[in-house]
Length: 114
Length: 119
Image 1 (cartoon, rainbow over the protein chains, first blue to last red):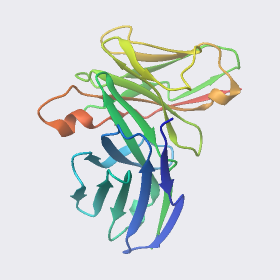
Image 2: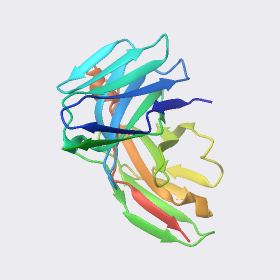
Image 3: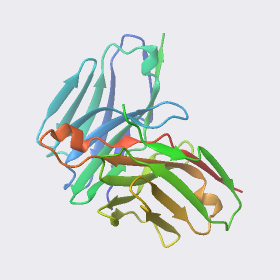
């Protein structure tokens, strides 16, 4: 079945450093790749997304890259701040006529030390 | 900004009981979803719903689960006979119709979740 692998499971960085989270997906029909930030007890919040016809997208300190051939996509956070500390989930979605089927990765717990 | 809402925020039920979790998606959205997240684990897709029918479901969504859009605003998830392993946070999500602004179509908006505890 469809699967999304996410690494690392935990990431600890110093404030100001960069953080990189990597994901691999199995369903070659996936065409939309959102990234979510989830704080404890809260809902997942979309922070950036990329569609399969784009290789890279940037939004201020956050960037995402996609390699469709290798089925890899990555999240890059630069100049990390303590408020970036949270769990980050990658996801791979396949759009159908009736909406999406979205498979999430297992999550990366990011700690940013002040 | 419009939001997806869910009720109740926390539901405690005994094993074997039926529960109904309620969601009010964003008003002009047409695609609806349920996800669950067991404590400390990843978000898992349960079902997608469009045009008053299920469009896709996962292996988790067995005969014990059902969804319904009983009126123009609510979207419900029913678990007929709860098990201990159904204890989780259940998130509803919705997104809008395809438009020329593709980004708006793709973004799923999540509700705050209902924490279901089965004892």
